Amino acid sequence: MLRMFLAVTTLALAAWTGTTTATEAAPTPTLSATPSPSPTLTCPPALPITGSVAGVTTTSVTISYSIFFRPPCGYDPPMTVSLFASREDAQQWRTPVAEAVSGPERTGTVTIGGLTPDTEYWYRFSDPDGKRDPYMIWSARTASLTSCRATATIDARWGSGFVATVAVRNTGTLPLDRWRVSWRWSGDERVQAAWGGVAETAGADVTVANASYNGTLALDGTTTFGLLVTTSAVPDGLTLACAR
Figure 1: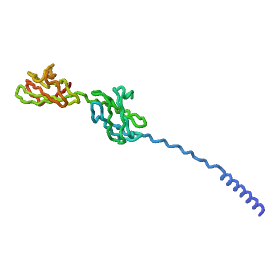
Figure 2 (figure 1 turned 135 degrees about the horizontal axis):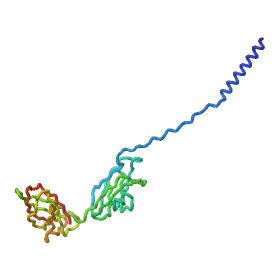
Figure 3 (figure 1 turned 30 degrees about the horizontal axis):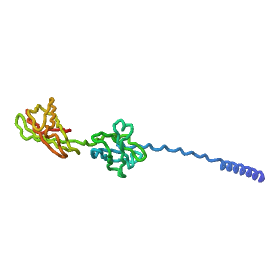
Figure 4 (figure 1 turned 45 degrees about the vertical axis):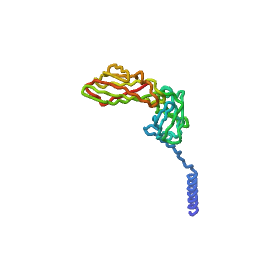
């Protein structure tokens, strides 16, 4: 009886040991990690760089700029400013006529020289890596070699008219050999007489050219002409344009 109990017990222990060993030997499954998607970059809804004309001469333009964002939404200086002869050339980045590189500042100015007087150019920006700004396409015009400014003073007025004196000044970089002042009346004004100039009218448009003796103006030189005007309402002043 004892022998039978020991035999049964031995068989049970052997079976239990074998089951445990098989369980321990079974491989443990491993879970593969699923990569998380990279976040989508969203840039602010604003221009990464902006520019404007800070000044012009007869042969140069100065562009001021401000870089608002760094890469990848913006740029790092220095920036290259490219000038083009037409808007179409600028849109296609085709054949720039002049270029200049900015300093290391994120806000500053760039001056481009060697240009033609009284000429319109179109400018764009690019960074040191050749990345071209797709937004800024603006124009700048160099100053004219010859230019003038006209200002009017109403010397006397009454119910049906006034007398005015117009001063013409050479504000260019070369002497003037002639000048023309033009404006448009806002009401029923009519020129009855002019002196120091030759007046021509076409409806509301008036042009006064120089007389034979005062067309030549040295640098910063000044001359005057006068007007006798009839009207039902005397204006506060005149807005004049002057050209060679």
